[in-house]
Image (spheres, rainbow, N blue to C red):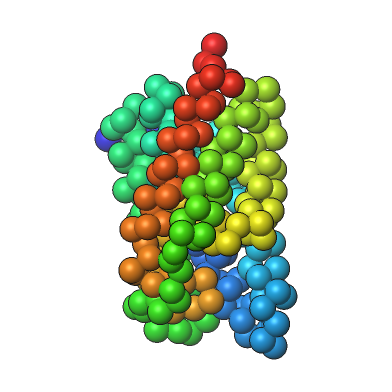
Length: 220
């Protein structure tokens, strides 16, 4: 791998790790401080997630594109804007970074490193929510890149904040996030039995977004 390729992979791993540390860590903190108020806990989980996305995209966007999401990397490869070999490397690093982020959150809160979630998230409504969440995320990215690339970090962060609340699944919209969140027994977890359904829905949403974006915002 070239030095530039190594730098891109490091950016994807670190950015994804911080994303998962924020998702899981803020979930743990929210559960501890919300006093059983589910709406408050969700709000406390939502805001750090949106905020960290803005920061990490601003920091690592110039290096790797700041995908932090296998669905995003695959979408760019399908559009011919990322080589498949680079997309594969991104995905490996995203998955590794996601797991490291979950483990970092566990260690910071002095919880067992290795956990398996018991939080059942499944069913037609949840799967449809993931299709819609991922579809909207990809449209947000492609639409902003078309005319206002500098707006992407803020648009993505704001979209995820909104999607936490308007989707039944709280908008995972990311296969790496989904897999890693199966490895935490905390507030943000998903039981392993629900992972495959979520990822299938996310990929379906991604494919729909790539198709629509190709018509609405064609490449120059």
